[in-house]
Amino acid sequence: MVNLSDLQIDSTASYMLAFFLPAFDAVIPVLPSETAIVALGVTTAGSADPRIVILIALAAAGAFVGDNLCYLIGRRFGPWVNRKVFSSGRGVERKAWAERTLERFGARLIVVCRFIPGGRTAVMLTCGVVHFPRRRFIPATAVAGVIWASYAFFMGRLGGKAFQNHPWQGLLLALGLALTVTLLIEVVRLVVSRRRRTGTAV
Image (tube, rainbow, N blue to C red; front, side):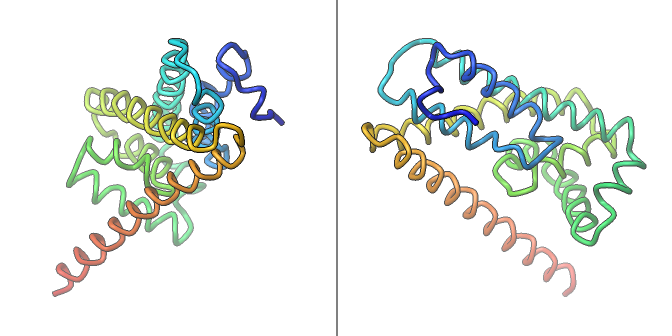
């Protein structure tokens, strides 16, 4: 367990968390990658050290690696992924949504799905299963990684500056803000999906 006080700019733990958690949470969604990046933003909120850019770059690189690892798994082991990940009712629904939305929005979905609960893994695996073109997938995941890492780090710095002497309160504030944004995006997605289904049914 890493304490907030351990997550400093010159700490090896900070650099490892920044890269490895985003890299593996696409495959293991329970890993708290966004929480870790937000925490890094909180603990470095009072600093203007240029090495902050390295932390953000590592987080973006980790996210990029994780997305492409997920894509590779879906592409190489499509039948296994369908049985293990998309066999339940919710899994079937998420895959169907990912396929429909990919067809409609393409690479833009790859960027947005990072902010949809459970959307990242479903979309990345589906991209691999349906052989979404790599020449479009790779740039989209690079852009998505940079946007996500910058956003999570900014949320952390915002909370950290609001509670400079109380980092845990700053972390809670930052996570609350991030959760609010995520919930708003999910509500919009559900409303749009429902309207589209209703329109199709009519």
